[in-house]
Image 1 (tube, rainbow, N blue to C red):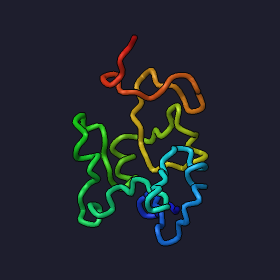
Image 2: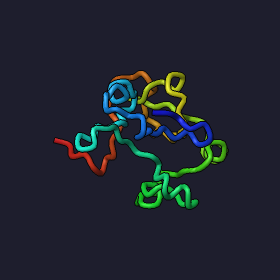
Image 3: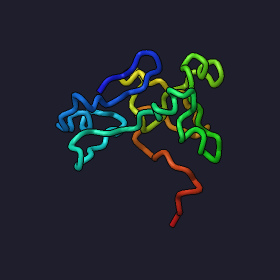
Image 4: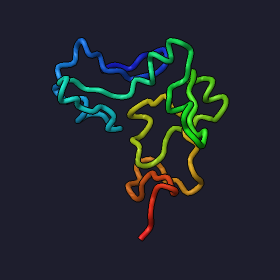
Length: 126
């Protein structure tokens, strides 16, 4: 697994992966998933095939709330600011993420273990 310097995508190198699952255990985001049929790790690759055609990832184009964006991190920071920390994500000083977050005013800081990230429309309250 490696992080590309030009765009920050973290990718699984299928030609090297032996399915040991160490990346699954170590990833602070829980992103790598084990493919038992192929005996290798898989994770989102940002729709590399679409990026090579200058198209955005499917999640960005299909988000009904238009809450996602994708592009060079410098352009995203200029457009949205530099905030990249919110609970329950790990500290940015640890992961050096290539993402921007526009947190809710009541969002908790990184390190806070209370609460969870949820979409209120997808959560039923008892």
